[in-house]
Image (cartoon, rainbow, N blue to C red; front, side, top):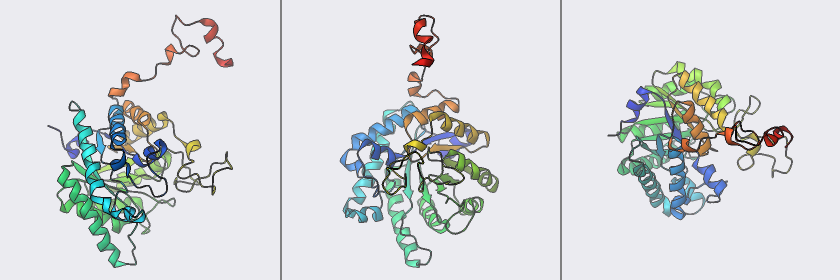
Length: 348
């Protein structure tokens, strides 16, 4: 019998792979800009394969691809009628992928995200947000998810609405803010205080995802860890954001002058990409500071996840193909390799 999320976290770190939006856009199945996950209806087999790859790489969580599959996003593209089938299909795909790996102790997560309709100056928007969260959480509960992640939300009050919907449904709640470049939330509340508010309102896990790369995420994690007694989550984007530009939504690639509009986000961030070893170091740092819900957000690929799993002391299914450079014809050390090739390696 699968252990629940809290039992797992009490025993040590779990790994959660996200980043489906960027992964599907790069593969040619999703449009950047609108970022609506129609792929779960149009090409479900592609979503299934990405789930498989993340599982094989070591993710403990199969997160249903319902991120941005909400009423407001579908309204923008004139397809609000697809909301329920999109949500239900994404949840089924995630559960079916989980069931393919019966020997693994995998958890299925539902997902809700920033609604983009919340307005602190418009009380009616609270009601709209509540309805959006409640319908999504309802479908997730009906599907039998193990917990729900509310993420990439930049307002404390909007997150509280999402949290209430999850807890009212009797589900475990993981609440991850996306923090602005200035370091806090759009309400003017600090990372530590924002997370403490969520803990006080019943969140089981609090933390941060998206916007910031591993180094800039690590800048705010100690404050969060100190502020709360519950479990903490950290899921950065795999991009080298900096003190000058802590978030990836407003990035410049100094080595390229052909990017339309000059902003590298979202489709020209390649030159700022973190390698697998940077993400592994982040995973180790999290584990050392008792941040146990560890993951990776927009930009994630299976090679990142596998290296993070290895850094946590694991050998996932895909470890079978872990690099072994000793066999490389030029850089290898195997005694049977041709010396004239290995001697010339630095000149090739």
